[in-house]
Length: 441
Ligand code: ADP
Ligand code: MG
Image (cartoon, rainbow, N blue to C red):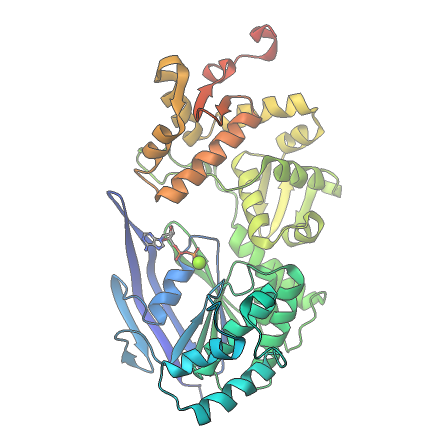
């Protein structure tokens, strides 16, 4: 017999407003979470994972579609679900025990039930002996454990976790993962299902029964994967790595024809192509690593360890390299193009020239260069450009895009930027593709 369905989303969409613009943060989402399942929502930043968690727990109602809990339409906050956020807000003036008890006090649970339950939970999450400590005395990992204990104190049927390990150092995160898995797989908590949000592929394959994989612009489900590996899972086992490879393949997609990859400029018809948030130095590292690989082809997942980055960062690097024409991607494999190889082999100065040539092809750069060309003295204040971008992006994302544009433009010596005056200037070579010699030194 199938386990009972806890959560059901039917054609759920969320529209947000950003200035004059309305956009789909998530579009037409259909999913189910059944009792006994540990489900992961996996996808890049901004694909709407947190939005979906808020919708599922009733913290917000979707713009369109239906949210059912145990077959009934959800109205208001779901009392049988709780969320643990990335950084858990503890009350600094309360002890660890009081910080957990407060969740039960709010539900008027009497102290003869409350106190033993809280002490037992603290014990189970490994905070035995810290009951009377204050948050400032705890490490980040221990504070997050208090967060777990508080969320579990109300014995939720559905435990939702929004990137609960991403603010922790690597070792704390790893030990907390193990502890959460143990609580869950050994039935030490009354929780019936866990829904966890992550952008970390290895973490998802390590913990989940099932992955719901999303992509952005608009936020949508692109794939579902069942991970039928027994616990505890071995990270280096061939089947584990096969799943990791498969998920990288889904999230990295496949290199499209150039006119599709390049997308449109801001304000132009078509989908605007925003830049992935990567440092040029890391991009160089990726290309050099591929250049050392026999045949210049590699499984993407193999690169994460070597480059010392998590899957989210790696996928952004891959996207940037793809956008610039330095690599192609298919079925979870990445291949250096002849151009990428030339870049990797080149001197620092020659790399800058190649890079400049490539970024000039990007519609968003052409848009910025045109803006600067038309400006008096080929200079613009940062805020002016950011405001122009804000017509299409939320303010923080507009700022981020401009930071990337300026960083890439400076590396390619197309742009100059003065942090004091906040003035962006078009360098001489930025106006026309002038070679180094023609510039006359
Ligand atoms: P994720 O958790 O996957 O990073 P979010 O659900 O936080 O994604 O956000 C999805 C998109 O919606 C992002 O572009 C984000 O900037 C935007 N967004 C999130 N919340 C709001 C809001 N309250 N108003 C406007 N835009 C929002
Ligand atoms: Mg989020």
